[in-house]
Image (cartoon, rainbow, N blue to C red; front, side, top):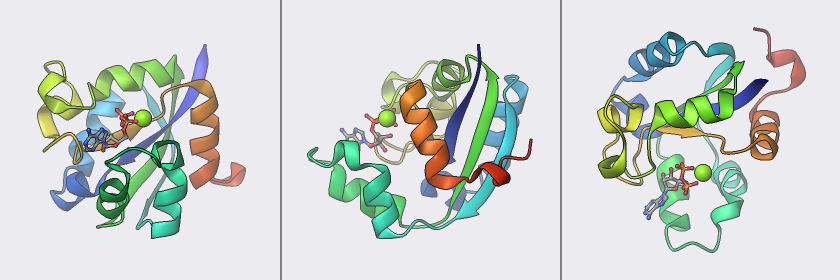
Length: 139
Ligand code: ADP
Ligand code: MG
């Protein structure tokens, strides 16, 4: 099934100029980048984006970190794109991420873990619409 999913290259990775390498890994995996923008999240945006985690102990730090610098948001499209990108990203904690995954290669910690990817069709639809209007999805 062809799906779309939301990717965010997080502030730690953008700060280390890893956008190009991470986007190359995405493209080499066969996923197509059909929309992309670099933005700096406001506090309100970061709080809303991660609302599902608002009761977790790491929420305040997560919002702080996600607003600490620019991020690169993109919409990826391909066969089973949601699971395919989660596999390419690797586990949330880089210590548990498989060899060759983005997080294994580039994450600094469980918080500063380089990338975000949607985890299910409903969240992908919500997260794509959070950052992109229909007319911005050009690919
Ligand atoms: P994922 O990004 O793999 O879907 P979650 O949705 O569980 O992971 O968490 C969202 C983000 O919150 C993570 O990517 C990471 O940046 C941060 N995070 C998750 N768990 C922790 C934790 N135990 N300590 C600090 N930050 C965390
Ligand atoms: Mg998640």
